Image (cartoon, rainbow over all chains, first blue to last red; front, side):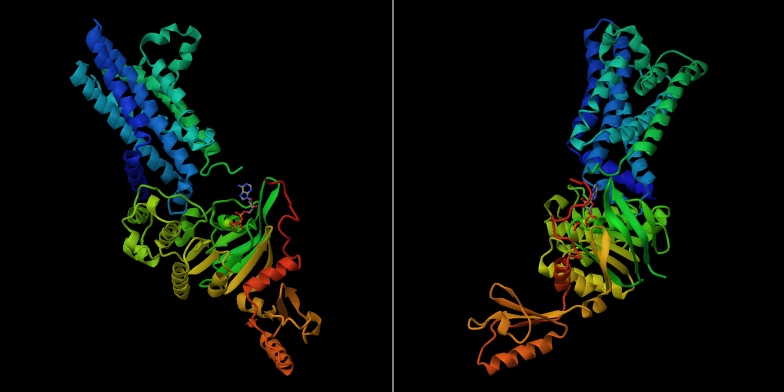
Length: 252
Length: 308
Ligand SMILES: Nc1ncnc2c1ncn2[C@@H]1O[C@H](COP(=O)(O)OP(=O)(O)OP(=O)(O)O)[C@@H](O)[C@H]1O
Ligand SMILES: [Mg+2]
């Protein structure tokens, strides 16, 4: 009952927060729809290149809408002593954070679906062959990114620093997953395993399999490593939250 | 059983001892005032009582429960008005109360909570447009939502106009009459005197005076003050007086008797005592007296700890 209450509150605040909507919705959505559409029209390879790029841009939605948004919202609420006020109620710590995470997952998954449909209509990118695989990783990926965002707030001293301290991950994630085109090939090869181990890269890998040719068996195989990567990141996030999460800003 | 039990409670921030081995109890259905100057440790004490902070040592029981270990259960029965906490600025006062009702089982209707806090007229106003005192009232409305058995109020009337303050007093009295236990802090000593049956005065983390309000005051002296006639030297008065400018102050256990003595003495000499004031002991006198006797260290003369 109280989880739905915090979920509802987070959702309401998400769409009202004019300050973060550009970073949390408009930019990721614009890039995820705009860049593949552009690809479709300017390159010879057309549809294939657009599909390739689109899957990569999902990393931008994951890092913008899930990670950046929840980090900014929570640090702001922490600084304004809103988290403290919420904790003066019957709500448990878990309900407060889970409501926030659940809302973030909802918004992120909606944006992923909207952009998949939009590039289908605008750039002829086919819909995923295996929508279940797409959906499972959209949800799991958003949940892990949102949880990592909650954990990351502990490293941020003040609300104004939340966006600058989070944006680098946005670019890193986009770079690693090919949303920025093939700049990634210019980076030293020893960096590649690290980039591939990012949670956004794991989601992109699994989603790529859901678009490409394959069978149920090959999809399962393709999902195994990304699932493990996400599970590892989830563990890291939960442990850091338990260890370092702060409900009030440092008072010293 | 006492509604709130505090036993040898201590809390430090780094090397700074904010709460230093305090103990007290609050009986169910009574109003308890926690007083003391800025930085005395009142808010820290409330945060320890409400489970926002963990004690270094000692124990706290609210309704027999540990506010940290049994947090969910305690939260269900207490209302908390923090000294400082934020609101969502773009929600209206009414929307804020409605949302908080979702968090509160068996909550009062929103209109009732707003009414109690005297905020009905502002229900449709955005929080960012509320005045300081109105925000404080919204705070109270939220604290009262769950019909709590125990109410913690940290400076509830700060920033309120005198009428609003009196209305809040009425609400607190009313709640106490219906067996709500109230622990409040305030810098308005009249407020404490009006509402509380028991008190503790804190200084530098310790309780320097505590107990029953009436008894505590009865044990202290009242005072008579008047303008000293220009022809009289202080030494000529029939009772020892201290001077503040032209104002003579006589302290006495029975200030009425002292006033009669002084008036009799003056009329024998054909003198008038202008601006005569007779006051029984008030909390304010007690405060001043504590400061004078060094029971409370003067501001700045003692600085313990190394906090900024
Ligand atoms: N997080 C903290 N870190 C360091 N010192 C702190 C912290 N919180 C409070 N203090 C110090 O502890 C002391 C007691 O603070 P507290 O807020 O309990 O005072 P108070 O009695 O409520 O004062 P006021 O009447 O001004 O509200 C103050 O000197 C304050 O500077
Ligand atoms: Mg205080």
